[in-house]
Length: 500
Image (tube, rainbow, N blue to C red; front, top):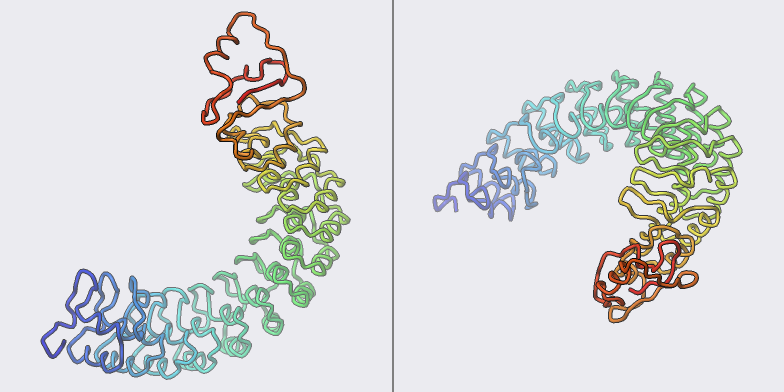
């Protein structure tokens, strides 16, 4: 194409570059041919991002310039010869764009690209340039390439440079469990208490990952175990969630506070409770953790274990005076009883009920749902029966004006409908024939008859009832959907016979 005069930088509406197809079916020979034809290594196209991208990435289709430019794609892919050629033709090693920000960061993330990292540095790549996912090349090298980390440090990379997903290189290495890299970074001046990134600091990242040796090393180098920040709030909560008993013990010995609040789970006890770490929960309680401390995604530790249906843990927390009457503070406003019902574990429900959780029987969550609504929604007949037997009302409506009985019908759960019907005392007149048919066998071509207690006599006083019955043409056709009236039951004071 080049020999025939094709412009290597020409754009087209569909593919962005006239030579896209040749680049897409990449070989080094084809790639070199594109360059010899004059293709600009830094050119972008609107649709595919970079004219030479696919040639650089061995035919991987680009969508929106994921790797930013051909040099970054080749660097990430470990294509040394293509990187050389691009640099010879003027590709800028510090060009910013794409997922990795620049070619050096892309090469550093690939722990087999030591030679490419050397080449990029020789051509002026800045080891401290910031950008995109990993912030800088040193952080991107966290995958475990000790030689790349050494090289970057020798060329001036700052171990305390902030930015990227992990905040800094030390946190990234701690998360990945790269002990030798952590040692090297600390020797070169990395600050173990530097804040930032997803895990807040290196200690929290190591605690989450269960890296006991790295946690020990960081503590020896001055890492603060009560430092707050990051997704889990502190290192103790991260370790508790991970189930790392030895790390939890070590952090507590070094002064970690078991009642410190913050992070996704509010505190370490809630994190351990949710994760089912019985020994960690016991240890935290022994060290003074408060089971009634509010906060975090599940409000408190008891709600967290209840959601998991962990009976042993529920009993443990109750034995340490966990309060079942605490009203929910979260946006969902789901009480402990809501959560117990949702868990579907009857033994857990019975245990909590005996402890006083019945106080939440009529509590409504953000949607107006009661615990009975939740039981019906989950289809848990034994659970629904238990709370019905203990006084739950199927007549309470949610914010959508739907009571538990109506919800059961719309769920087409006949067993639940039959369970709730004898307890339903209000709102039956609002239920349409079509609602009844939802939970019945195939009755599309017949009439339905419902009888509750004894059929009432029809009393005609002012002819209004008689006129309405005539006008409504009872019994209704099986295919008719009409709004029910209070007079459908023939008597306003008792449930009687109704034709549908």
